[in-house]
Image 1 (tube, rainbow, N blue to C red):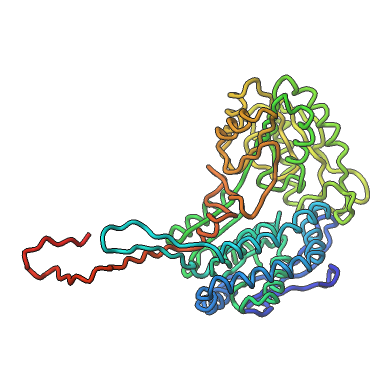
Image 2 (image 1 turned 120 degrees about the vertical axis):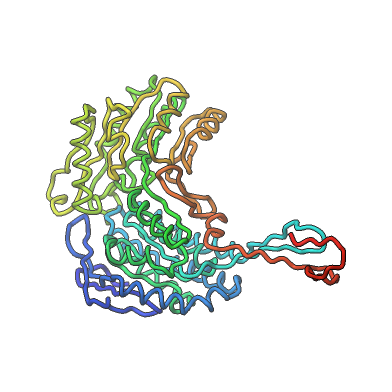
Length: 501
């Protein structure tokens, strides 16, 4: 792919072809580091969603009926092609998200693993034989659902999409993707990779557009077999209601407010742990360590060192390998962060670091914001409870293990948390009592295609990754075979006791 320019244009991808939107509308994609346009994209709406669903329906019988081994070969080829083309994808991801190249390179290099892993799952997944009683054989097989709708966000455009696409394709489904209007470029580019790998036309369709139009049309479409969404909790409630109306499965990774619990025996790792958990992606991730819970005995030292290190984070041009933190995704998102910083100060929290836009000409056009730390925070403050989705972390002390667990569980969210301790028993004990779908011990942000990923409470439903995810893109058919050669006539009054259940 050519270098990003403001003259770049991408259309919808439907039925194996790039096509303009029915309405002829387009929208602009900008570089959040400069505020300048980097591309225009066709703006899909309900009419385009309908065309995409029709294309996916037409492709489903052949793709869903294909041998799993054949689908696996295509996914393995996709992994190879994506590996070869990673530099193009990295450049575009950096440009459309503002994420530093050091982050995007590390993240995208992992993506081929998802296609390889789910190719292996498709190839090796086995059905089951169930006890059923005398003279009968009962086995179950898994079949693809049909046309699946995927709604993906802007913060990890290709990673989160891949976590849905790989298992859904492996299971034999056809797809209609509605990417975020803020970062739609790489989801459209992925179509080229899948096409080169041999994916039949109509299996993968992309309709970029806005949530109120394209998104609403997809998530409420009566012929969609499943909706898989990554987004905000309130959006998740609306989409879940639409899925419920249509009686289809719904999976969602929603909001988060992850706690990072640091015990005193991990004092030497506390600051690197907190920096990694809190400020990767400029805090724009659902598993951001937004609540730093530090044992009282090391609280003052950790806070002081954390402030020093946060103030030293290099904010700058995302394409510079030395840049450690890039901009927010948009002016709207930065405004939201600034609003919460003012709320925190009004609530009585102390601003220990950041809380401002960086000064300098290189930051003038973009949506940059400094790493921000609040101390003297009470657990019921809004900044401690509500998802901000930016580089803002609240530091709270705890006295005992029990208090740490209580604090970690005191929010409405339950996507992720991390526990930092050298006491192995304590690490597993605390992890087991934290109400979150993902708990790391002495780590944060780590992910693997084989490791189930999803939240509790208001953080969502269902799982990405792993065999459990593959199975969620299938429906189970139970086959019961009568092996007896005895005749059976329920209505023949021959005096024998008959059994039908």
